[in-house]
Every structure is written in C-alpha cells, then in structure tokens.
Length: 254
Image (cartoon, rainbow, N blue to C red; front, side, top):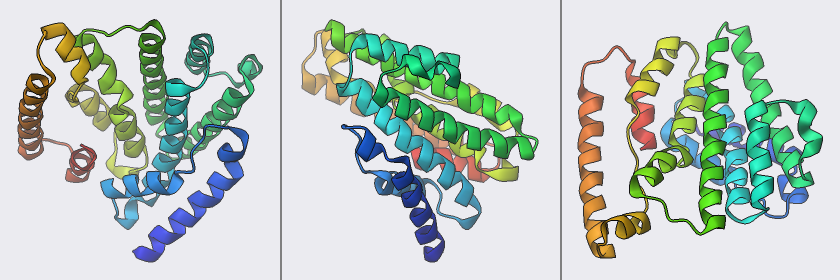
C-alpha cells in the first residue's frame, strides 16, 4: 500500500514539475504534496488510485486560482477569468493575462484528461457534473473578490450561500466521485446534488448582521457545528441506496 502511495506521489510530483506553475506564476505555491495527503485522508485504498490522481490535480490548480482571487490581479481580470471559465473555450485564451493563460490552459488540459477517460467508460454524464461544479466554484471566488474590492460585508445568509461553494466541498466531492470507477452512477451524482449540506460561514458577517459580540458569534457557530455533525452522522447511518464507500468519502471530507 505504501509503495503505491509513493508511486502516486512521484507521478504527481513529475506532473507538477512539468506544469511549471512555480516558475511561470509568481504567486504559485509548491504544495502538490500537501494536496495529495489531503486527498489521501479521504480514501487510501488501492482501488481509488485514479480518484486520488484526478482530485489532486484539480485541487492543486484550484488552490492556485483561489490564491489568485485572494491577492493577485484586478477585479476586471478576475471577472474576465470567471467569464472564460463559463465559456470553456480554449480558442479565447489570448484574451487573458499571461498568468491566467497558464492556469486556464492547465485546467482545461486536466479536464480533457478526465473527459477522455470518462468517454472510454461510457460515463460522459459525469464530465458534465465536473465542469458545472468548476464553473460554480469560480463564480463563488469572483463573488468574494467583488466583496473585498468593494469593501462589502454581506449578510450571513448571502455569505453562507457563497461560502458553501468556495469551500470547495461540492467540487471536491464531485471530482472524487468521478474517479471511483464502477461504484459511481448517474444516480449518485443526482443524490449528492440533493443531499449536500451547509458549511460554516464567517464570524464577521454574523457579528455585523445580528449586532452581537465575537464570542457570542463563536458560541452560536459551535452550536451549529455540533448540530451539523449530528445531521451528518444521522445521514450516514440512515438507510440509503448509495454504496457505503460513497458516504464514507463525504464523511471523511467533512
């Protein structure tokens, strides 16, 4: 088992070197090992080797995009990148600044790899879910960038609506599902869209909206987290047609 994980990490490190993010992009961080071990915590079993490979690549690229939206580039550039993701067209790449070209090309290349593998297995429907999840993810990043540039503190409800996407939980789950071979069916993707829950939001938004102290906000969120864990455990134990490995992956991610 350990030798398999070492081989996977070696191959991903080679891919990372060939990708050249840390050379071509000034703000890119060398964190492919960190991302791989995060993915490994979800599933370590040998049968999920492909899932780990695909998810590590996608999460490494999305972590760089997250950094870009957090601290690099203008709001206009961020908007353009989000629009390009929505179009999903490599022929329009020349409209982007150089650092965004590198990221956009890498993302589309990884997704092309996913699409080809899914087509071979007759699971083209899964690629649609992966692409839509990415579009929604980038849209959430742009919303947060807009709040920052405009100095806007949203309501807690609005923040939660965006944060449950920008947390990358929906995207991570969808991409991992894709790599799980025969276990994942069209029904599994539909189940996840219906059943995915909420994630924690920002203290600052809660304090502003409800005029409470930070400690009161922390106390409230601790209650919400405790209740969320109860819901997660109940959902895991509740009879369902979904295979246990699918439920386990979502549980490990939370």
